[in-house]
Each structure stands twice: as structure tokens, then as C-alpha cells.
Image (tube, rainbow, N blue to C red; front, side):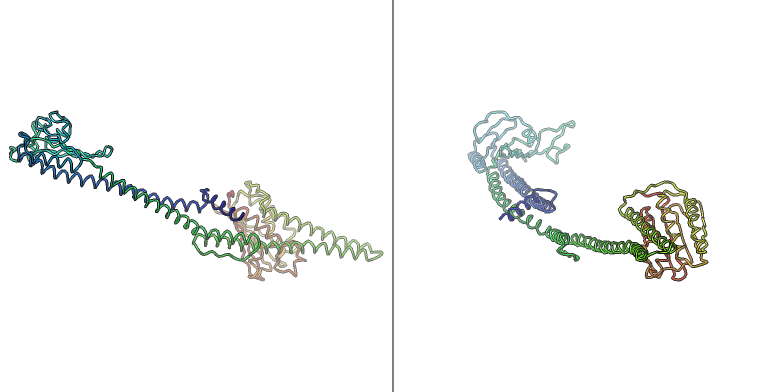
Length: 506
């Protein structure tokens, strides 16, 4: 029961929080469903009201025009004694629950079905316009009536050919005059209660229908929000299983294109993590082996000394020299490891400065030439043009030193090492070629791995820690540069480093 309540609270929180995709989908579907239905209801009601008023107005206008003709034929404006006309007027008043007033040419009310305004004078804009030949209508929604003014026209009167005669208008000196054919005006007000009653009934029914629609829309919005977000929940569940260690395989949720993209990215990350984990385990194994080897050698040498009595001074001296050599090797491994870890974790920020790369290269080669002379290897430096770049001098020294030193170490007797420095408007290149033993093609992709050695049988006599190229590549990448290698086994190798002249901040 407690778990069910917690799930209900969680769902409620998701729908209350606008940060939830489920809540946003729910609100979007709700708004998209409800707003058009409300607008449609208002439009239908408004359209019905307008149509009903228009039809009512046209119907009454037609009947009033017929009555107006009867008024002229019966000369009602002068006699007012026709019982037939009076009956028609009363019938119209009763039929449309309204009021009919007959106004003569002198603006006097000669007939009022309500019997209130007879004998009074009416002067209004509508009446004046009607005497000029216009039929007018006005709908007052607030008070619920339609007011109409119909001219009582005597068609026996012929208007002379004057401006506006075709429309029944008389214009004198640019001023519109009353139409001489209009003998009076019928001013009629009719009730729209039946329209209002119909609108009320329609509104009630529409409200019921709208409530049902809203309930259906809420249900659809709820279902859609759950259905559309369920794939994301499955993605979350699958990722949590990987995180908790229940599963370590690639996940698959192909319901939506978006979830496929997320899953694909996660699977790539998972594979990357596996590779990193394998690399970490291999690295730990290699570090353990590399650190243990000098210690084992020192222990063997020390045990040999301890096991012998009256050890000759010459042998003692030889063993101590070997122990010192192993200590130096151990120290070098630790130093290289620390340098590599700092680069990997970006602990050591780059100390960027403007450096003359030509001078730096000359200095490095000056330090390494004594080593080359011991192996009878000729070192040649070719500077195509002066190069000045924004680099970290210490790390760039590591890059150059490691590449040139490797070219010397893995060279043949009477061999050569050629260093070429060049630049364009964006990058400078540092190329190191040699006539050494070369690298097998199947090993080229692994040479930057930590502790990797191509020729493990000669690694001991050549020396080094197996970390030089890993450190070199890290330093190059920190400068946003690149390093490539081409090699032919037995003929030599060429390393090409490309570094931006201007440092690109990360």
C-alpha cells in the first residue's frame, strides 16, 4: 500500500512539474483539444445568432413592405380608418411580439400598436434616413429586440430626371433631399426572445457536449502522455540496470526515433567505458609488472650478495651498480607515470608562452647528439623557415625529445635521424624520420598505448619505460594538434607532429 501511494505521489509530482515531459505532453494535448472545441462552440453559437437575426429581419422586412403597399393603396396615412390595415398591423405586432408605429410625412405618429405615442413627433436619424429612401435595421442583443424602419413609398409618383433618380434619391446643390415618393415610415420593433431561448437551449446542450469532450480529451491526453513517455521510462530502467550492475550488455528500445538515438549514444558510451575499463585493467597490470621487474632484479642482486661470504670488492661494486641502475629505472617509470597521469587528468594546466621553435629544437638536438654519437647515428636538422608559436615549452620539449630519442634508440649502426621544421599560416610541423628498424604495420595502431613495445625481446637493452609515445600523444592533443606515423619494417619510420601556431583555448 505504501509503495502504491508513493507511486501515485510520484505521478502527481510529474504532472504538476512542468519540467516533466509527461506533464508537457498532457498540457499540450489538453490545450490543443480544449481550445478549438471552446472556440468552435463560441463560433457556432455566434454564427447561429447572426443567421437567426438576419433571417428574422428579412422575413419581417418583406411583410412590412407588403403592408406598406397596402397603406398606400388604402390611403391609410390620410384616412386611418381601414379596419383591414389596423388588423394587419395588430397581427404583425402580436405575431412578432413587437410594436409597429406609422409615421406620417410631418414626423407625427399616426398609429402605434401599443397606443402610447400616437400624435407625438419622432425625430431620429433612422427615421430621417428612411424618408430619404433607405430601409434600416438594427439588432440590440443587450435588450433583445430588432428595430426596423421601412419607407412607405407611393410608386405612382414619377421623379423627374435629376441626379440620383435611379436610386430614388434627390440631390440639390450637393445636398441629399428627402425622397418625394416616401409618404411615411413604418418604425417596427420586434422581440428576439425566441432566438435567445433557442440560444439558451443550444448553449445548455453544447455545455454538456463540451464537458463530455473535455473529459474525453483529458483521458486522451493522459493516455498519450503515458504512452509517449513509456519508451523513455524503459530507457531509464535499462540504464539503471546497467548502473546497478545487473546488466552489462547493450540496451535496445526501438519504440521511437528519439529513444533509438539516446540508446545508440548510451551504447556507444557503454562500449567506450568497457574499452576504458579494459585499458585500466591492462594499465594496472602493466604498471605492476613494470614496477615489479626492477624490484625483483634488485632483490635478486641483494640476495646474491647476502648469500655469499667474503664477497670480492669488484663483484660487490658490480652488483651495486646494477642495483643503482634498477633504482634509476624505477624512478624513471614513476616519473613518466606521474607525467602521464597529470596530462590525462588535465591537472597540469598548459603554461602557454610565445616560443621560438627553431631555438628550442636546436637546444634539444644539442642535448641528444652525444647519445647519437655513441651509436654512430648522424642527426640532421633542416629548418625550412623561422617558426614562432604559442606552446607550453616543457610539454613541447617532451614531445620533441621523445620522438628524437626514440629515433636514435631504435636506429641501426651508422644510421641517420632527420628533423624537419616547417610552418604555414596556421600550423607548424615537426617531422622526425630515421633509418631504424621500423615498425610492423600491424603494430602501428598500438604504439601509443602505455607500456607497449614492438620488440619486447630488445626492450631491456634499449631501455625506456614504454610510456614515451603515450606522453607524447597526450602533450600533442593538449595543444590541439595531431601526430601521425608512417613506417616500413627494416627501413625506418617517420613521425609528423602538427601544432597550431596560435593556442586554441579549450
